[in-house]
Image (cartoon, rainbow, N blue to C red; front, side, top):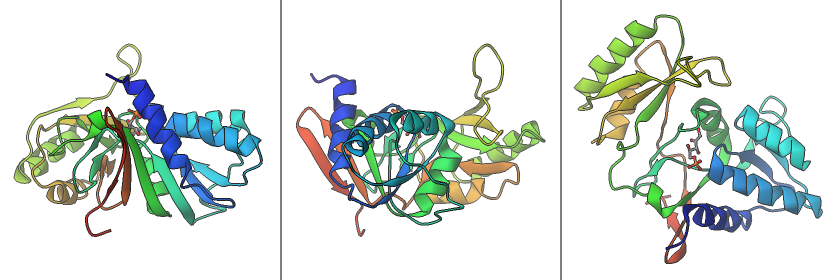
Length: 235
Ligand code: 5RP
């Protein structure tokens, strides 16, 4: 039985084959994306030229340490490729992301990219999204009112379950790189992600939710049987 860490590494290395000289890249966040960034750093050290936008301060620190040239979306608003991990991936390559708390920048960067490729171990594949609690980034102001409205509108979209404020060390709230909070919504199966997404986007205190719908066109997934490329149907 291969270890999850080895599978993450295999998926990350396979994604490196998609990187070409001169590309503008979005760099994801999380343990799988970090393996891709490490491997990219080795290619940069041996002469590859790329320009990258990190999706979190953690990834920025890692990329800087590796000498990967960085830019911002203000300087470089269009990217060629973003490579990122995911918490869950369904057969249509809809994803839940945000386990690492970086969903907002991740979604902004992926949306600014011509292509998003998701890298994962096969344990991330699901039939239906929702076993992994859905992260939703919210502003601090009016937190309880926001949670109540998320609950009410999600229920209309067929999703019910506990909504918990994410905490960091101790009981202090987890603060995102944008200075916001995250609530994790344990809805169980999300029957219609697009319907839930529409509902969440109606809540004024919601900054962004962790469902990535129609963004990834390719998933590189490593498992016991090797590395597979899964294309989004119709992409
Ligand atoms: C961070 C994310 C990560 O991509 C996701 O949590 C997967 O992380 P890992 O590769 O460590 O399993 O969305 O916000």
